[in-house]
Image 1 (cartoon, rainbow, N blue to C red):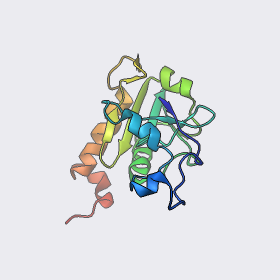
Image 2: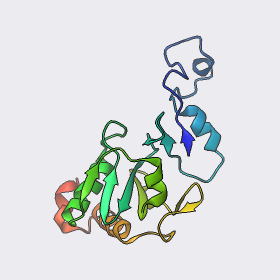
Image 3: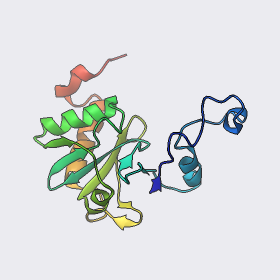
Length: 165
C-alpha cells in the first residue's frame, strides 16, 4: 500500500507547473500510480489517517459474512459499486458502508475490487499477506457469478438493468 499524497502536492491550477507542461494527469495520486506502473499489482491508496482511500476501483471487504465498503466520503458511488451493493442485499448479505481501516484489509475473510473494467476481481493478498485462505471466497463467488450473469443477460431478475442494443 502507498500513502496518498496531500491534494496540495501537485497543483493542477498552475499553467507554469512542470506537470502541466508535460501534459501528465494532475491527480494527487500520480506519484503513487507512477511508483507501481511497472508492477503487477492493483493500487490501494491510504489517506492521511492510514485508511484505504481512492482505490483504482472501489474495494469491498467480507468479514464474518458481512460486506463492508468505504463510505461515500472516500469513494465514487459508481454503477458497479451500486450494483454490487444491490446484488448483496438481494442475496441476503448485510452491507455496511463505513470507513475501513488498514488493519481490516489484513484481517478480512475476503476482499474484491469492482469496476467497469475489472467487473468483480478477487484479491488474494495485501502487501503479500494472504487474505483468508488466499483464494476467492464464498461471498465473492456469489457476487462475481451473479454480476457476470447480469452483464451477459442471463439473470432474468435483473433484465431491467440492461439496455439491449
